[in-house]
Image 1 (cartoon, helix red, strand yellow):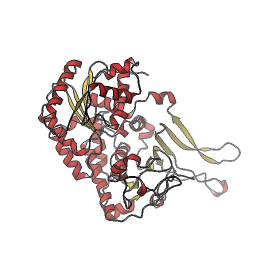
Image 2: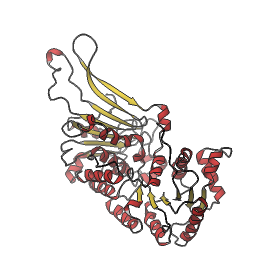
Image 3: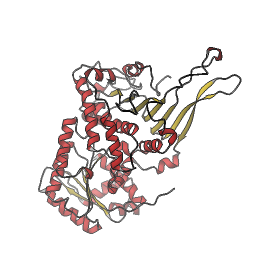
Image 4: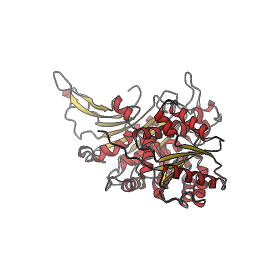
Length: 493
C-alpha cells in the first residue's frame, strides 16, 4: 500500500553543514523526502561551517553528494532551496547574520517560522550553540523550534548531565531530538509491531517462556579513519550505551498505553530503571572486553594509524544484563558487539524455554533432545524474521529435527524502504520523538555503563585477545557457557 506524503514546512539550519555526515547521509535523505513529496515548495536549508563558500559553491557540493547532474531538473529544483553562511559557532556576533539569513529564507519560501537546528558538531559545542540560538533570537519565530543533535551525548553520566543542563536552558525536552540512527532502521521499529501486534508473541514474551534474549551488533571492518575518535570512546561507549541499550529497552519494555512518543518513552524508561546496575564483582563477572590482534592481511588494533601502541581501548564487548522486574526476573539479556568480526550484521535472537518434559528423547527412541524454539529478528544487512520449530522428519520411525520458518523483505521492498536518516528527519519535522532518545533514557543507560567502565579502568586487560574474522575473544563464549547456554549465532556450529 502506498501512503501519500504530506508536505512539511521548515527551515533546516545545519551546523557542520559541510561535514561528511551531511554530504553522505543528510542531504541525500532529504532529497529522498523531496522526491516523495514530504519536502516540496516550502522548505529551505541553510548550511553553516567555518568554510568560506558561496551559495553556488555549496549547492554544487550538495549536487555532488546526490550523484546528480545539472540535467536532473528535480535535483536542481531541490538544490535551489539551499543557502550557505560561513559561521563561527563560538562568535556571538555571527548569530545575528545567521538570524537575518534565516528570516530571509523564511520569507522567500513561506516557512511559517518553523525551524529545525541540526547540530552535527563536537558535543562540546552543543551548549554554546543552543545558548546563542536562544539569546540572539533565532528561536523567536512564530513557528516551532526543534534541536536535533548527533551522538555522542557525553562520555559518562556527569558530562551528559552537564550537557543536558546546558541545552535545557534554551530548549524544552520535547524540543530536543537526540538522534540514534539505529532507531530509524526498519526492523528495529518492527520490534514493536511483532511484540504488540501479535497475541501469539506477546503472551509468551516473559520469563515464564523465554529462556534468554541475545542482541548481536557485529562489524566486519576495523576502526579505519575513526581511530582518533574511537580510541577515546571504545565499543562500550560507542555502541553499548546508545544503540544496544535502545534495542534492549524496546525488547524489555511493557506495552504502552498508546502508540505515541510520550507513552512509548515512558515504558522504555521504566524498563531501564529496572535494569540492575552492577557492583564491582558483578561487573567483573558479567562483562568481558576484547581488542583485535593481527590477522592474515590485517594489522592489530594497536598498529592502526593514530592508535597508541599500548592502547587498552576495547574493540569488543560482551555482557549479561538483568532486569529486576516481574516480567524479566531471572531471564538474562546477552549482548555483544565488536569490530573486525566474522561479518557485518545485526540480529536479535529470542530463545524460548524447552518443554519441561521431552517425550521424544527416551533412549528407546534414539532421538536427539529437542532444540529450543528461537525467534530471530534480522536487522541488517537483510531484514526479516525466522522462527525455529521442532518437527518430525520425513520417513519411517519418529525422529524430530529443527526447521526454520523464514520471511525476508524482498529486493523491491528493500529498495523502497526509507533510509534511517530519511525516516528520522521526517519524524523531526512531524515533532514525533518516538524514535529519538529522551534524556531519561540516556541518563539510565549512562548510569549502567559507567559502572562497567569504572571497573575496567581499575584493571589491566590482556590485549590483544581475538583474531580478525572470529566472533570475539574466548571469554565471550565462556560468559554465556557459565550459564549453560550458547550463542545462537556462532562460527563452526
